[in-house]
Image (cartoon, rainbow, N blue to C red; front, side):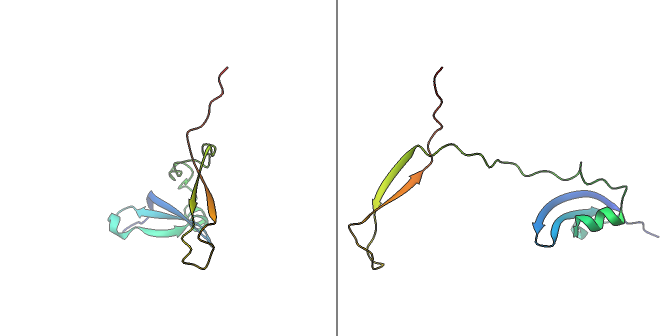
Length: 99
């Protein structure tokens, strides 16, 4: 008899139904990994701790401030005024105040 338990979390994704993890099962090849809802894994395998297995997304919501602007003319082919200027912000290097 083959005992199948979660061995490793390969990835995660957020869905409307909740957070899902891609589980690599013990005694099965990685190609048989399946997406499972976190709450189902926690309920079915309480000894399998997901907290230390899920790799958090890298990156940040922090961005440097918008410091530069450029202006371009609209194309006019969409029925707008071809001489109307459109201003679009760009992201530049963060300004660091000197002490």
